[in-house]
Length: 168
Image (cartoon, rainbow, N blue to C red; front, side, top):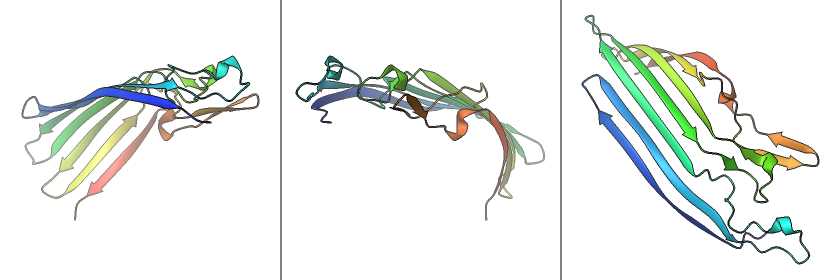
């Protein structure tokens, strides 16, 4: 298939703010308008082949990310670190033919962590929670025959973990 011509335009904003001595805020926001201007349909193709003006596959219009980190210094030289982040994206189409079965709706993923750290000794132990709202999503959808194939990402379900770090 020949995509013909496409156009992409957008804007992106990234920020990081040390709001207080203990609180850091950061994030990003992007808007991308990625469209198929003209699509060269083969002779005799069905009318559904005309996707002029439709969204390019894998191109959500909006994506955003926000993060907050708060550090609580303890009297014994240790730090308690609290962190949370949220990422969101608008709906996305995965197929150039604009098949409704290959459209992922808008979704957001929320993560959080709590850690105990001693940076003088070079270690950190954290309890992590990923996809805390247990939001199911797919980074790829495709069709074949009467089936929809779905890629399942690692973060498709809520999970928890422990992270250990030691600097040498």
